[in-house]
Image 1 (cartoon, rainbow, N blue to C red):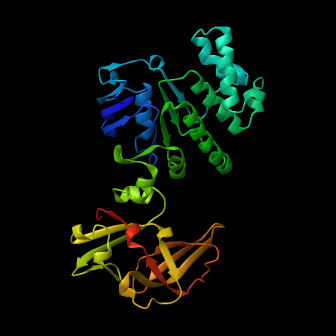
Image 2 (cartoon, helix red, strand yellow):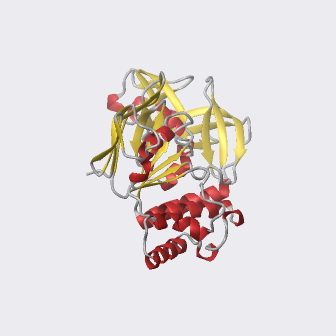
Length: 358
């Protein structure tokens, strides 16, 4: 039995369908991220799980019991869930210890049990030495740890996080996403995490749910999501990519200004009249010299029209000869090419992802 199930879930505001026919099941101890652009329905879905909004259609179940439906809803405080907001929502007039212990006091634990659980969680989130400080005396990352500790210490059935790192700077955000994953591995609380940050979702998630216009586009583990996107939207939203669209003509796929061997394409036997591929920049190699036989693989001649040094790699934009396309390729720092240089791009077709044509 699934820990948390969303079954045909929908929410309408007037004539606008914010969430449409969302079905998803989470196993016990799983961390699933809802990922998508602003307005895609991810936060509305999370608020329905929390009980702040009642669904228009469908239902939500926890351990097989219905907690939300159009005509029925268990109150938020009786769902056994904890939620962390963007603003952290920690009380400024309480110390770190008092903030974290608040939920335990409501559960009327004995003084000894309360102290034991409080000290344990503060040690795990590395805040024991700050127990008597107030939020105004803490950094953003420390305040985020307080919010996490307060949510986890009550051992909820489900933990909900609504873009909790969006107020942090880039370095702290990177540190805290690893911290969230570490805490999840320690406690194994079933978790739904909302974010618009693809890197964040890739790092912390067991599975990612990509949403668009209120619907689920794809549900998959991070590696499969990145390497084998099911739709054009997913391919473009998860990391950077190049889109190649072509028409099958004999044994070749004719693209804008060049042609590629069809027999080398992934799942070549199932190619239709129109074929589209997602090609990640790091799967493209850049060569100065022309290959002995350009038809032996997927080779494209062109000129570098833009370049940017990003420290860990060069980011090149190459325009194929006679084409309006602009293909992005990544190369190590030692692989330096000048703007305007003529180069050959070598694409690894085994790492190309077939996607539906536009």
